[in-house]
Amino acid sequence: MKWYEKHFGFQRFFIDSNEDVNEGYVLDQDGIGLRLTAMEYWKCSEIGIKLPSKDKVEPDCKFVIAESLPEQGKNQVDTFLEQHRGPGIQHIGLYTTDIVRTAQIMAQAGVEFFSPPPTYYTEVGKQHEIESAGYDPQMLLEHGILLDTALDKEAMSQPSSDRYLLQVFTKPIFAEDTFFLELIERRGATGFGEGNIRALWRSVQAYMENEKEDTQKQKPDHVSLKTS
Image (tube, rainbow, N blue to C red; front, side, top):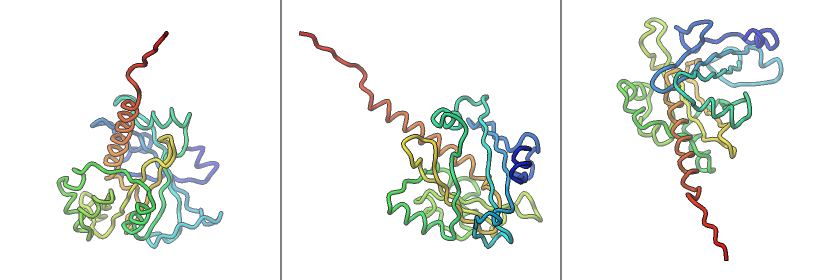
């Protein structure tokens, strides 16, 4: 991380308020073995990058380094490293002011999106969280859109319905499962949607497992050779 700070001027960005400065944001349970370390760059405008966001006084650019934790077994990070033949960019987040409309247009153009587990929208508190932000859970389910509210600064354990973000992720856009796109709409929230990380992880894992099963089904179980 020091290298990024020294050579590119990045600063550390904490995904979670309780995140350890050295360990990063760690998810090591329920089949998820993942360490995330985030950084941000506040001076993108100096080199011509413009990221329109009414939630920020000054445009910025964030990136996250993902690391696989071996305790939970092989996972999508390991698969990415194998198929990409080394480290690289897994996905890029694109800002939009109307994620529902953007997702609809992209779907009509043939873009496919990851489908979060249906239980995501019926988890305890999630339906209320979505409705408090003014959205219909069924509508978000249809488009695979995730919603995460920021914690209220006055009561850090309580979500704030007026500060949230929405996210949706495309399926890999190339032949190998090494790169996809994210659409993100921010409504006051400035984080990464840490409440959605587990849902995204499970969506990608389910997709990869289905792809593996489909590939195995297409392979012949034997080859017959005839000689005369």
